[in-house]
Length: 574
Image 1 (tube, rainbow, N blue to C red):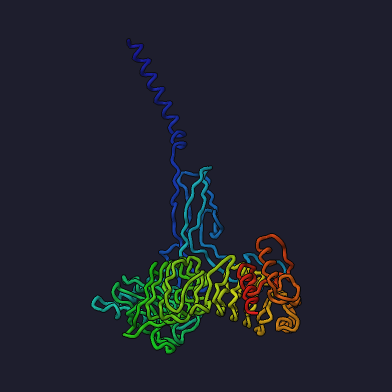
Image 2: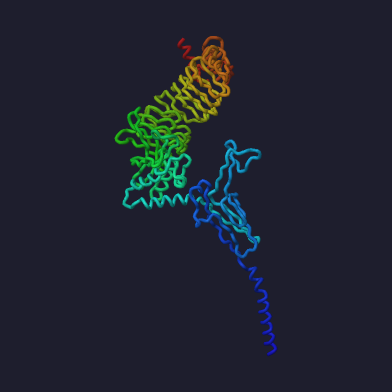
């Protein structure tokens, strides 16, 4: 028994020794590695900003990654290279751009001297890979422009010092407008940060400053297009501010030395409105809401007087609006008013409307529900005035101009995808730019009866040939402007031949002289001509090009039963 106890004791001691000897290597292999950070933020300034402000010490400009428990650690930037990496320390990377003749390169071109060298820092999220003893870690590095923090801090300090709880909303907005107006007008700067850091900026900088500071005190604000206002310059912007009840238009972008003029104007409508002397009423020329509604209803009066017109580019290229409701008092819809409103499906044309100017509905491809019961009607995908003037067509592919139309308004088919056009026999005049940029229309046959075609009518179109009747006596000087070539088919001694002779890019081809209705080309119009055309229409026989020209009595470019009827009427009249 004693011997057994001694053996157990010896065994216990040996086990303890083994455990003691193995403790150190076991602990080392079991130690957990630990990366000191997976999400860090560093701050930077560009060279211009460094000239006027500096980054405080408590805003780190670099960060060093470390892995506890690892002997070998390396670091590299991934997903781009806009970080400087030195060992395991990362910092913002300044990227140089070398400019040659308006083109920028990230590396200098060998043997060439750049026109200028600019630099920038990518202020966004960067990513790094850290490798420690064969194990891989990933971290996100947020590169932040300290100038943005400086600007917001400066603005907040100003607000804290100048905004009181007992102020009205308008008084608060005036305090904010003064902050922008106390800085110089400078076309080189266009942001809120720039205006605060550099002490000045253009109208865009003033606008963004007002918008940001209004939001900082709990108001809603957005930028407004101001370039349609009276006396405004191209590209001008100002601000809209609201407390949810009252709206204010805020202007602090005037070009002059500080302190500059500023204005806070009460708005009783989100529509920009001005007086229209032509129609003795008001015109809506812009909608200034923060978001374009799907249904936009234009008011019928302003300060007790009627809204009589819709201005140029009213809501052009707004893709949210689906329905527009116009008041009955509207008399004119101006150029480009709804151009590019690709979601617009429904609109009413008031009974008093008498003018729709060019491109008013250009590229309104979804338009399908048009209520028009006055002087202007909408039929056959076209706006038609008094049943005789085709103002604007919204068409693609083949299209036949309705009978009764006598005039095609300037730019009536401009920018459409019409590929084949058949004229009504009643058309007499074709306005300026009528087929401007019709890039799929390759040929055009004018009906017998057309007397004039205007300037730029075919400019930038694909038309390469046009058939002209004798009745066409007036060509606009620039009808074929910017066409590589155009072949006119017409009659000797006609205006078509004269026009071709005066333009190097136009070729004239004489058509044979034919007697209208003389289908069998025997020199007279008889009942046999009606029979010949009927047989052709029934596909019982064929007709030569010359015979088809004679058969097309109404000159609409289409042979049909109407031509048979017209020949019969000619015989009856004789």
